[in-house]
Structure formats: C-alpha cells, structure tokens
Image (cartoon, rainbow, N blue to C red):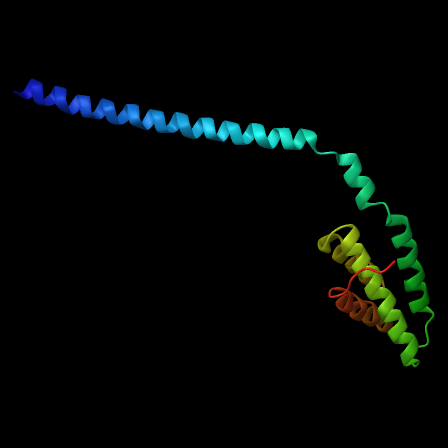
Length: 140
C-alpha cells in the first residue's frame, strides 16, 4: 500500500513538473518572439534620418539664441516694451529647442546658459522667457 501511495504521489509531482516546464517553455517562446520583433524594429530604425530631422535647424536655433542673448545683454531694462519683445523671443527660442530636441535637452541648454550669466537682470529675463516658452509653440 505504501508503495502504491508513493507511486501516486510521484506521479502527481512529475505531472506538476511537466506542466511547469510547459509553462516555462511557452513564456520563453513568447519572450523570444518579443525580442525578435524588437530587434527587427531596431534594425529598421534609421538613425541618420532622425539626426537630420532633429538637428536640421540647430545652427539656426543656435544663431537665434546667441543673437537674442546678445540683445538681452545690451538691452535697456527700463524699456518695458523692449523687455516684453526680448522675453517673447527667448520663449520662442526655447519652444523651438524643445520642438527640435526634447524638453530635457532644452532645459539643460538654458540652465548652462543661466549658469554662465553674470547679469542678474538678464538671468531673470531669460528665466521668465523660458517659463513663457514652456506653454508656447515654436514659430521660426
């Protein structure tokens, strides 16, 4: 009787192991299919076209940013209209940077610019332009 009981228990255990092995095999097969699918997508991804699209207007944006910052450095801060114009230009440059790269990249560029700026008035103007640019569409 003990031998029969042990044989039945062993049969259940082996059946459970076989079922678990089948489930593991199915999961591994599904994972392999996902990896193959992802690898095909990566292989078909054209990095050159991304770079040309992403950085197509980078020289124009860099020139626009440089010109705007130079204008801010030479601006008359008592002229409210001039300050609003500069703020609008800065916000547009920021919006274009976000559109052409990413929010993080644009923030990093502007933070680097602000870190190297000695004039507190210009820093404040740039920061307010960046804040306004977060809710603005790029207009080149």
